[in-house]
Each structure stands twice: as C-alpha cells, then as structure tokens.
Length: 384
Image (cartoon, rainbow, N blue to C red; front, side, top):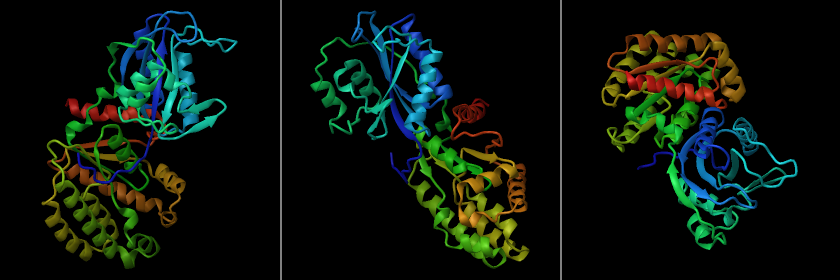
C-alpha cells in the first residue's frame, strides 16, 4: 500500500497476558476487553499458548500478547494495567514470590524505547528466556526488533534457552475487529478551529491502517498575516488555501484506488467555501465561488463526511491550550460564524453521506471510552 505521509501520533505497546486460575481463556478475553474499553486500543491479538507454570508449582498457564495503541506514556499505561489486573481478580503475593493468578499483564515493549525505572523495565528484562512471551509477540509483531540486543523476534526464539513446551490452543478475536470504518473507503473529517479533527484522523488512520491525507495549514505563509489584518489578506489566504487543498487532494487521491484503499483526510475541499464566505467581501466571494465550483467537480466525494461539533467555549479552551501564537486573538464571533457556515452547508448538502458528532463533552485523545463512542457512531452509519 502506498504511504502518502506517515505521521506517528500514538504510542505502540506490546503487552503479555497470562492466566492459570479459573477459566483461563475467559480471563484472558476479559482482560483484553477491559484494556480495549478503558485503557488502549487493542489492534492485534496473538494466539493463546499453553505452557507450564514458570518459577513455581502450579497449573499450566494460558498466555497471549496484544498490540495496543495509546496516547498514554508508559508509566500511565502501567497504572492502567495494574487496575485491569485488580479488576480481573489478581491477588499478589505479600512476599513477591510467584503464585497462581487469574490474570497477569506485563508491558513487553513500548515503541522502540528502553525504559529502566524502579517499577518498569522495557523491554521486559526476562522476555528472551520465555517462550510463552516470545511466541505470542511474534504473532502480533513479526518484524519486532529488541532495541537492546538488536536481535529480531525470530532470532530470539531460535536462540532462547527455554526448552519448555509452548502449544497454541486458541485464537482470540481482537476487539478492534468490531469496527469497520474502511468500508467507507474515504473519510473526510471536518470541524471548527480546535475541534480535534486532525487528532481523530490520526487515530483512525493508525488504528485501521489507513492512508492519511493531512491538511498542510502550517505551510501557508498568509495565515499569520490574516490573523493580524483580516481585511487585507483574506482573499490571498483563501485563494492560497483553495489552490493548495485542490492540488494536494488531486495529487494524493489520484495515487490511490478509492474502491480498495482506505483513506482518511482531516479536511474536505468544501472547507474553503465555508471559510471564504465568512472572510471575503461579497464581490470577492462571487469570484471565489466560480473558481471553487470548477475545482469541486473534479474531486471525488468521500464515502463519509464527518463534522465534529464543539461549543464555542470549548473551542476557545482548546485553542488556548495548543498555544499557536497566531490563533490566540481568534474571537468567539468568528468561531460562531464558522460553525454556522458548516451547519448551513450540511443542511443543503446533496449526494454526501454526512455524520455530525457533538464532541463538546468528549476527550477522544485521552479517554478511551470517548474514542470508542465515536467509533460506535461510525458503525451506526455503517449499519444503516
């Protein structure tokens, strides 16, 4: 698959899960489901391997690994996993010795980082000598390289001293398989300034292996000038945006097969028309609209057009938080006008599959439940 512009937004982690008490398979599935629902997006799930208890006398373990995406740093991820263990009924030995357990969750790898802290060591320091870790890791990340040993996972398995039997007994389904945004082929995500459209586009593109088409707003030389003197630079800004958006979409989308590739963009060309109506004089807008219509007809329409709605108060908070100097003087009135322009467009849009999502009280970057709630909204459209 062609990569348009790789951008790393989330952290990738490999987690190892084990259970040798009660219904081992159910314990693993419940642990995975809890991680996915509350902590991180579970992207891949390995086979389940049965192995003898390690380091103590006990029943055989079921073990698996999962690959997750998260915006949490490693220490926050660990805190969440300790909660997941507690929810799964794990009881730790008061002396620190190995004992049987309903669920055990360890961070095996975190990006390509080496972490050496009192309560967290990554890569897991004993992974190279444990088949019940190595085999599942290979399932979810067959190209994984140990950042300290500089050895790939196949070499680690070939060279390990562990001779214990490691037999695959089951395959669990990854929770992310419940979602299928790729059915839309091409999703365009819009929103007011500070609504989080780029963050959502990045998360969906990484989690579902989509091609990302990000807006190149930071490269526009007229943007800081416009915020300083809107009347003088409005037409130059809007024409520059229109030309750049058309060229980018025309170039990037022409490289893809929109019937087979999955594409996520954090803007749609109609954005140019909405902003220009607010910023341009009546005469300038009429001329601009004529040029826009010519370009618009030549571009493919997205399979799903998402508008992220946020209240003006929340938008102002987000703008202040991200701290771009040239955005700090944006007024509530300006944001209200943009929002009205989008909603007016949506009401009159024909031949466009539109989904409006109110994210005013949502934090889909840092709150896993909010992100899954958005994915649920997409699935509702899929089922219609």
